[in-house]
Length: 125
Image (cartoon, rainbow, N blue to C red):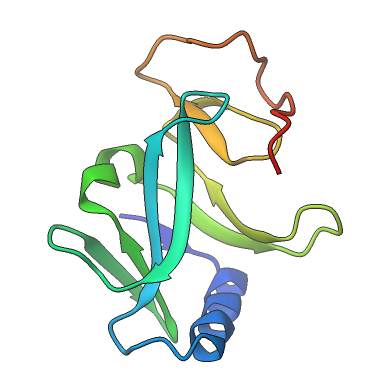
């Protein structure tokens, strides 16, 4: 199960309303191989697919891709308004390390494949 902070609930409700999303749509979250730390997060407004898990809170709906459930279990979704790094943020307890921009991570159960130090900038936007 994942949690969604109150700030993320507020911003996700605004986003879904602005996108005129269907009643089934939500922020679909998945992880795929890639990024500078081994796995990268993917987020998009979409409808759920077979096998996905849905987490709802107020006007917010987060859809966790079925093939990503184990890597996202226990995550917290937050929203940041930092001047240089605004947007939805994922705090992942399954990550042994992550890149400086927060878009990729190395799971704790996998050996390191990159020489990047925890928090080092990966150079991706």
